[in-house]
View 1 (spheres, one colour):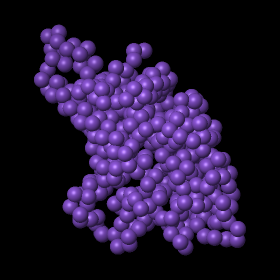
View 2 (spheres, one colour; view 1 turned 90 degrees about the vertical axis):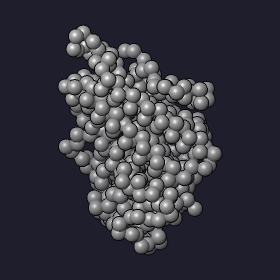
View 3 (tube, rainbow, N blue to C red; view 1 turned 135 degrees about the vertical axis):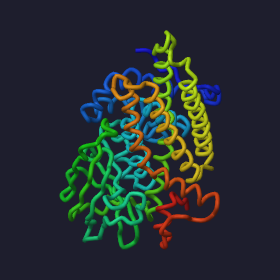
View 4 (cartoon, rainbow, N blue to C red; view 1 turned 180 degrees about the vertical axis):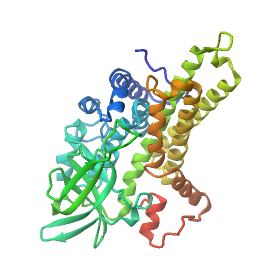
Length: 407
């Protein structure tokens, strides 16, 4: 199998450090050698490639930006490049690592007690334990401030009631980071697999993210000990901080998907002979599509790189991340569509990766903030006027709609 050559029309590699390039090339080789040979089979079978989890743990792909617990403490550009290369393999694989790192390890590390960190971070980092993140509910996606899941104090513990929907890794997880309303506002809780009253079931019938496990979580008088609350959580903003971490990685992941579909289309167009013995790459209409793709990928690379530099310097804002997620996933979606057109009938069979990426990106286009919701976040940032309809009246609900508010 030939190595993926990358897409670097504007010599952006020169803007990366040696460490960042090394991290990217290491993950790129892992994807080429270990992911690509099995991912179409996983997609067909609708299964998560769990056989790759221990190896991803050995490569320190889980919690890579953490510097304690023998983790590498990578910068955010290096982390983004990990997400880029994983999504080049498959959006489901990137989702697995993104959830484990940004939505499980991050809140435990940031808001958890020392005992919680010591117990969970090492096992999550190695892949011995798997986590999931429970925020979205059946009736509340873009508006998490409307959540109905509750946690009430009862003696020496908490009792949870409610449900969560569209949860990546839900039935695989050893621990779920669950967000629930309490008398004092929204708090985060650690709910362990096997806890009485805690149920999980898989979502069936998916045509997208088939190499990823998507689940529903149920809590029916689910009793957990008091020490399972994340003590540093003080409101819904903490859950949104986790989402901001994940959206950052998703913006990088979109580039990986676009790179894969573009490269597939480019190679196909140069090899597909039609109309008098000429490759279809010689035709103006095909070249126009390829030019659009490489142009938008290049702009997305620069956008993601600047996001990473801002994040490393502590200057990244939630609306910067919204711009990155909104733009780069849209670009990935358009690249998949154009690549499918260039491949013609071959674009709908999984002899090529295009249709799989095309299906996957539809989920990524929706989750972690839809294209339209991120547009409203950016709109408020540039005008100072919130255009959500109907306008949120409670400060916490408005923050939920508008994205993370640091502070």
